[in-house]
Length: 177
Length: 269
Image (cartoon, rainbow over the protein chains, first blue to last red):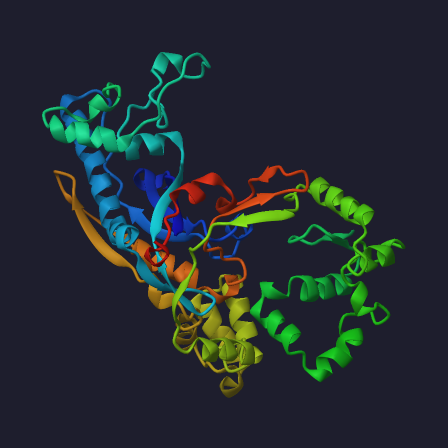
C-alpha cells in the first residue's frame, strides 16, 4: 500500500496588480520516513498541481452565493481530474518500479490531508464555522462537553444523491446516523 | 563549536571525524558515498589519514560521540561490548536529543511488499550511477561549475558570460553555452520523465479556467523509484515496541491506520 499525504495552502504571490495568488497542491507518500519528508532538498514532496483561483466575490449577494457553490464544485472537479489515475490504482493496484529494483503491485490510498482550516472549508464544502472533522455545532466549538460523531463525507454524498434538490449547505445539517 | 550529526544526533568537534562517521554509519545516505564505502579503492583507504585531516584517529573509533572527548574511546568500543549500562546511557542520550526511542521488538504485517518482478536494467543503472556520479556531465570539472551556477541563481546571460570568459575549454566541461548546459540539466534527473505536466480546463459557469497538474500515479512512481531512498522506503506496516513493551508510534508505518487499512495480497488468501 502507498499512503498518500496531500498538502494544500494558498500562497500570496504579490499585492500589486490585483492580489495575485497561487494555490499549489503538494503530495508525498507515507512509505518514506518523516526524516526524509522534512529534509529540505530531499525532493520527497512533489508539486502535484496549481489550482485555478476563482475570482473574488462580494460577501452578500444571492448571485455570488450561487457562484460560490459553482466555484466549490469546480475545485472538486479539478481534484477528481488530478486523482483519477489514483482511483483505479487504489482499487485494482498498479505495478510500479521500486527503488530496490523490484516491481510491486501498489495500491495508492489517500491517507492524510494537511491544510489550513479555510482550505478544509473550501475543499469539503462546509461552513467556515464548522469543524471539518466532526459534527460539533458551531456554538460548542472549543468546549469539551459532549461527544460528536466524525464526519462521514461518503454518507453526505449518498444523502445528496438521494435528495438532489438540496444544496451543499445541508452538510451542516446532515442527518444523524 | 561541535557539529551535531543530523541523522543520529552525535556530536563531533572536528570535520574529519564527522565525515568519517557519515561515511561509516550513514553510508547509505548518498550513492556516491556508498559506492566509495562498499567498494573502497585502495588509494582512498591509504589517503584517508591525510584527506580527513585527522591521521591519528583510528577508523574503528569513528562512531564515538565528541571525537575529542576523552570518553570517546569508551563510547567507541561500546559497539564491540554491548553492555547494558552503556546501552541504557546511549538510549537516554538519544531521548535527550529529542529523537525517537529505540525499538527493541517489532511485529511485521505478513504479506505486503512482495515483488512481482524485476526492474529492467536496474543493475546497469546502479553501476552507472556509482561509476559516474556526475552523469550526465562528463566529469566533476563540468558538474561543479554547473551546480555553482544553479545554486546562485545565475541568469542565462551571466552563465553565458562566465562560460565564454572563465571556463573556456568546453571539451573538458562538456558544455559551451547555456543552451548546451540546459540540455544536460534536462537529463540530470533520470526519473524526470515521470513528472511531466498536463494542462486541464474547468468551467466555473462564467469562464474557462486553465490549470496545470501532474498525474498522481506518476508522482507516486517517481517517489518510489528514487534509488537514493531505497534503504528508507517502507512497504509494509509494522508495530514497534520499546524495552518496557510500550508501543512506539514514530512513523506512519508504525501507527495503526496503515495496519488497519492494509489488505493481504490475493496470493495469500
